[in-house]
Length: 124
Image: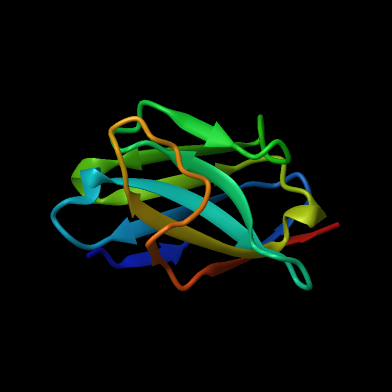
């Protein structure tokens, strides 16, 4: 089992940057793919990005491709989401999630463990 805690959210102007962190408990963090999701007001939760167990593979939603970068440091049990050139439509609660998968798998759904979320607000 793993517990996840997000941090790094806040208020930023359009065009600005934020880096979210997802800190995980447990000794087997490198058994999990980790994804970032977001839920905007009045909308369903959507996939943002995912990184494989060792960080060798990543995948992004089209809406963030080229602006967001997901990375991980397994020695620190932490996954990051660097968000650049933020837009008002990026405003949402951002969640990280973990799933036990095969080595290079990049799941975009059906995650087992979730954090509590961190608010990101982008003003125009």
